Image 1 (spheres, helix red, strand yellow):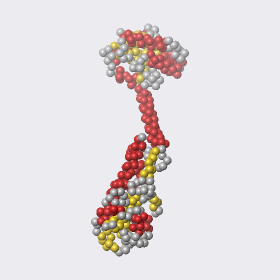
Image 2 (image 1 turned 90 degrees about the horizontal axis):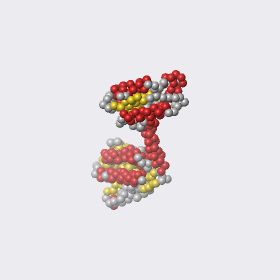
Image 3 (image 1 turned 180 degrees about the horizontal axis):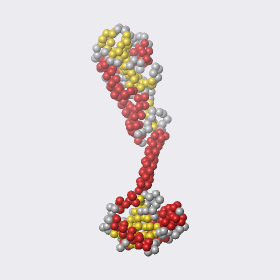
Image 4 (image 1 turned 120 degrees about the vertical axis):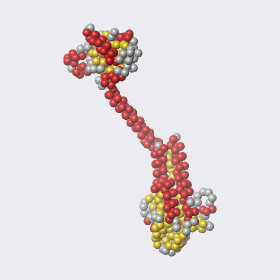
Length: 402
C-alpha cells in the first residue's frame, strides 16, 4: 500500500518536473523578441560560451546571455540532465548552440533551404501554436540515441512566433536518464522500490506532458520489496539481535563467574557496602581441599558447579548469589527475618546433603546473619564467625549469628 501511494506521488512529481522545464523555456520567447541584432559575416563565433554558426552575412540576434540564463535556470531544475540548448533562426541563416556538438554541426550543414525549420515544425505538429491559450505549444520527442555521443536523449521543440510568422525554433535536449535519476532519488528518500521497467506486480503507464509517442511505465514488484526492503530489514534486525546478545554475553562475563553463574565478588561487593540492612549467608564446602587432592581439580570444579546449581534452585530470582572465594559463596536476601533466613539456610544445607554430588558425599557449612542498621563489613564479620562455629561444631550445619 505504501509503495502504491508513493507511486502516485512520484508520477505527479515527474509530471511537475517537466511542466517546470516547459514553463522556464517558454520565458525565452520574451527575451528573444526584445534583444538587439548585430551584423555578422559568414563564419563561426563564440560569445559568452555560446557557439554561433552564421551561414551567410546577416544581422544576428544577441542571444548568448539569454541562453546562458536559460541554462542556469534549467540546471536548477534538472542539473546535469540538461544536454544542449539550440536556437535555430528561420530561415536558417544562423543558429546558436550551447554547446555545439558534432551531431548538431552535421545537422546544420545539411539544412540546404530556407524552409528546413518550418518543415521540422510541421512534422512535429507545432504549426500555429500561437493560437493556443492552454495545452501544449511545444513538443517533447520520444527517446533516441544521438549517434555522435551514443547518448539517449529527448528533445523539446518550442517554436517562437511573431505576427503568425515562425521566427525561431528553440530546441532543448534532455538526457533520458533524468527519469532514472528521479526514481533513484525518490526511492532513496522515501525507502520505496519503484522502477521504470515493465512486468511489475503493480505498475502505471503514462505519457510525459506534451508527448504522445513514448509512454513510460512506473511500478514495483513483490520480489523487489522482499529483496530490497524486507530482507535488509531482517538483516538489520538480526544484526541488532546479535549485537544485543553479544553485549549481554560480554556484560555477563564482566559481572558473573563463568563456572557457577554467580556474581563475581569484585563486581557485587561494592553494592553490598552501600546496604545498611543485611540478611546473608556465607556458605563453605566442607573438606573441599581433600576432594581436590584425592580426585583432582577437574572433579573439584564439577563439585563446585553442582553445589552452585542446587543453591540456585533453592533461592528466589531476586535473591543474590556471589562466588566469594574458591569454594565459598555469599547469598543475600531481601526482606528476610531471622527465622526466615534460618529456615532458608537449612533448606540449602539439606539440598546439598540429600544426594551425592558426582558420586561423592558433599556437605556444606553455613554462617548466617540477619541485622538492620549495620554496615556490610560488620555483618560479614558476624556471619563469618558463625561459619567458623559451624565448622568447629562438626560441619554440615547452620549457625545463626546472635
